[in-house]
Image 1: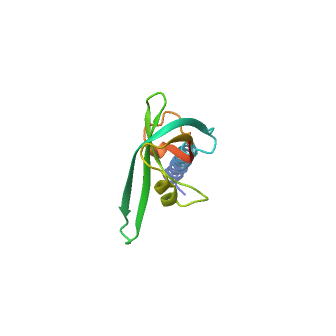
Image 2: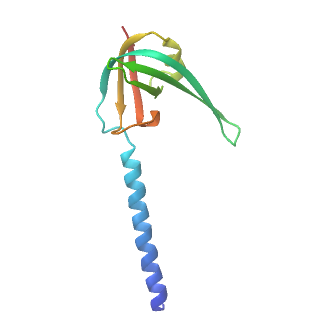
Image 3: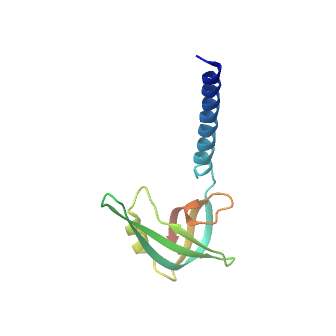
Length: 123
């Protein structure tokens, strides 16, 4: 093998390792498991659905609820659950409902995809 090929293989190997490290850091930083659950008194102030169509013909519906916190902040959450359907949880909430929201939020979250709904218990 020539010196030029060896150098190219070393550079490609180093680049591949760096790329894998960057990908791993991004994946780990988006995982909410390490974030503590937060609990807050909130009011349901809005609801909406978003339907997505894939190129393979499948359709997904996302259920989104906007909550107002006691301090005045408003945050939107995509409803998910491991024990009940998202539609069932979404349909059980009405605008004006108040209660306790349990959620996880990544640091410096600005979008709902960095917030994770855990549960909502009506007063």
